[in-house]
Length: 429
Ligand SMILES: Cc1cc2nc3c(=O)[nH]c(=O)nc-3n(C[C@H](O)[C@H](O)[C@H](O)COP(=O)(O)OP(=O)(O)OC[C@H]3O[C@@H](n4cnc5c(N)ncnc54)[C@H](O)[C@@H]3O)c2cc1C
Image (cartoon, rainbow, N blue to C red; front, side, top):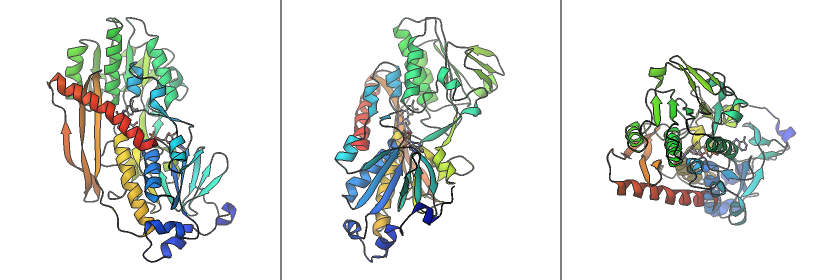
């Protein structure tokens, strides 16, 4: 964490301090304080864009909402598997911030946040601009730990894409996938827990197999060299693979292959204790932790993610900062866009209540993760989550059952399409 002085930043006394001193301050009155309270949000993805829209909509101009996002636009990782499988265009999973600005008054700053001075309550941007804040929301997603896979690196990712962040990586993976010939194999190395969207590597394997089968590539296989001994929705994916793509998807757990010893992206090999595997396409997804900015300002713990108060998403280490999305340690809540959106709504309500001096809103989180086994056939898992003994606990859960009717799976698939429209509207207006 940097330690700038208040003089160097040229900061006036925090505007919220004046606001908080007003007894019985309620939300509409925040604007009447000397200056509007300033909320800065870092990260314009599932968590950050949702938080910006919900804050701005509820505050109705009484606070200044600034969204700092490195990209001009945002390409969703969710539904990137639909893009890889040719079910969606790249444009359809790419979204702009125009409505957040024009309809909700959010100030979008296209820059990278490079440092947070928690004492002075200010964020420094890559272009040197300093943004003071009264409350900060961090939703920078995940940082990939490239060296968790020996031989893997940002350079190697240009040849062997992870496609676990951002649109460029998804494009690379799709180009390489489309160039495969019959008989050429794909190797997928999924990450260890906890990571972004636990079922997504296996949904990706399904959609690859589906597209290969459709092209008549009966000689190709998807080989999954897992870093885990089991995986999300395993009891649903594996029967699905056997039924739709017999012999085309092979999953090998770490207890079978003994561990990934080396990846050679240029040679197209993954060396394990068991064997050297060859693939014309390597999809290497390394281990993950909270986005770099959250770690650099000291909000992550030894587990790599940021501990938060279960009832508000407020950082346990700094009362002026809320951490949401994949960077937060959500306890039982998996790392998903659905969960990030749910957390954003809880954080927004609590942040506004905090600024206005009104009671906290009760926290209740929801999540559903749909996974395609093939287009028109999806399985799902989800639940409701609430604070229990200081943690976000799963209080109700549901999961698809093996052998369900095709109609049920089709209905799940259609629900997932509707959900995509719903969440992206909730994020971007
Ligand atoms: C293949 C795949 C499939 C998935 N499918 C689903 C699904 O079906 N359903 C589901 O719910 N979830 C799914 N997910 C998970 C989902 O994408 C993430 O959980 C979700 O995007 C997390 O939201 P976030 O706000 O934490 O991070 P992100 O959405 O990644 O947003 C973080 C943003 O912060 C920006 N940023 C980071 N650091 C800085 C900085 N210092 N300064 C400025 N900007 C910064 C980044 O540019 C990025 O735009 C999937 C993920 C993958 C990889």
